[in-house]
Amino acid sequence: MSGSYDAAIIGAGPAGMAAASSLAELGLKVILLDEQFRPGGQIYRNIESASPESIALLGAEYDRGGTVAERFRTSGAGYLAGASVWQVSADGSLCYSHHDRSTQIHAAYIIVATGAMERPRPLPGWELPGVMGAGAANNLAKEAGLQPIGQVVLAGSGPLLLLESTLLLKKGVQVAAILETTAKIPSPLALPHLPAAMRRTDFLLKGLAMVQEIRRSGVPHHKGVVDIRCHGTEKVEAVSARAGGNQLNYPADIVLLHFGVIPSTHIFRQAGCHMLYNREQRYWYPETDKWGRTNHERIFAAGDGASVTGALAAEYRGELAALEVARCLGILPAYERDAKALPLRAALRHDGHPRPLVDAVFAPGPATWRVPDDTVLCRCEMVTVGQVRKVIGEGVTEVNEMKILTRCGMGPCQGRMCGPGTAEVIAEATGLSPERAGLLSIRPPLKPVPLGEIAAMELAESGSGPANIFKNQSK
Ligand SMILES: Cc1cc2nc3c(=O)[nH]c(=O)nc-3n(C[C@H](O)[C@H](O)[C@H](O)COP(=O)(O)OP(=O)(O)OC[C@H]3O[C@@H](n4cnc5c(N)ncnc54)[C@H](O)[C@@H]3O)c2cc1C
Image (cartoon, rainbow, N blue to C red; front, side, top):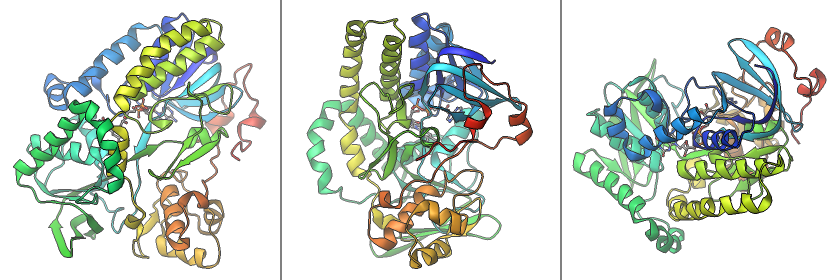
């Protein structure tokens, strides 16, 4: 599928589906690409094939995905499932790999809606088989109906940790313990956000119901947990931690870690978009205007990839980006764009009332980063925290220099798993903010693609030539 489009959208989650539907309904030539094989993104994963039992368990929030996907399917937007985008240019061209063939297409506008990823948080034993993300376990359940077998320990912080705990309890999974790093008493910084959050009692009641469900189950639920360690030889066998001066030890066949979610920023960084740092949430995100336009005229950001605000907000932000793209393409006059945007912005505000409270309660503190030297930091290259600390001791405090000297971030995941952690280790050692350690430069291909496939690639007529594809556009 090579050619030219009015808009190319990357990511078939709520943001991407809403953007693609909106533009296609206006009669524009739109293509949506996603590396998954079905639309839905993270939250609505597999929604089109979900069983009634699964929908009943996951509730109305998941069920909404059916409506979003149905609108997308009937909108007339083109859809390429199983397509991994590995390069994006400011001129509107992008390259993707699909069924072992790479293709370059060109679009007047690109909306990047690649969502978020679980915050990778290195701790002793996190690389052992049997240790995985709580969100990843949630994905396996939605995708393939898989459940963890044996004793399960959930550890970390954030609403998704509690959500996954309650889902597992409802399914009768043996949960041995929940180890929350969130403080027992919320930070006073959260208090000023309570009145706004009270405007969404539905949201607060859902949170309370999850906590009660966990309490009723009788499963040990510790808060203010520090020093989480996974133990085992061939695979994980136990978890230890400390809470309130007590040593905690639990046998475990599966450990589900979760430390919140952070925007997936590789495409923005590779395309040379300006990045900003959220000091409270300790993550990078692309700088955008109120429509989601980045510093590149043709590249927009929508959804959790632009900053983490949840599924409904992702949908609204996808629509807003689409409205501005339609205006730029001469389909909507500015007054009509603004009129259509008004209810979306109101809905966005309403949806966002609890967000500052949630962000403050679950804010990732720097204290959670004191891990022992032998902890593996870069899982691709097996670089330890101690190796990185040694190089910091020699005066290196920037992540790209660290990568050159230690290979930390040089593996096939392109620093997705170790980039944020490396900055945190540097921050811990220097006493400065992690943003001072910088961001790893990202080069195409964003995903592993065989060289032969790239050499045989069809190039779009108006896209970048081969020489530009591999030019590093990161600043
Ligand atoms: C693992 C995980 C599980 C989650 N589960 C829940 C949940 O159960 N409930 C909840 O309320 N929130 C959940 N969230 C938060 C949730 O992701 C968001 O609020 C919501 O899905 C954001 O929508 P989005 O459209 O921005 O992105 P997403 O829904 O994340 O969709 C992004 C899409 O982009 C695609 N993509 C990414 N990179 C590329 C590329 N290079 N090429 C092609 N396609 C690409 C992905 O395959 C994905 O389908 C989860 C987050 C994570 C990380």
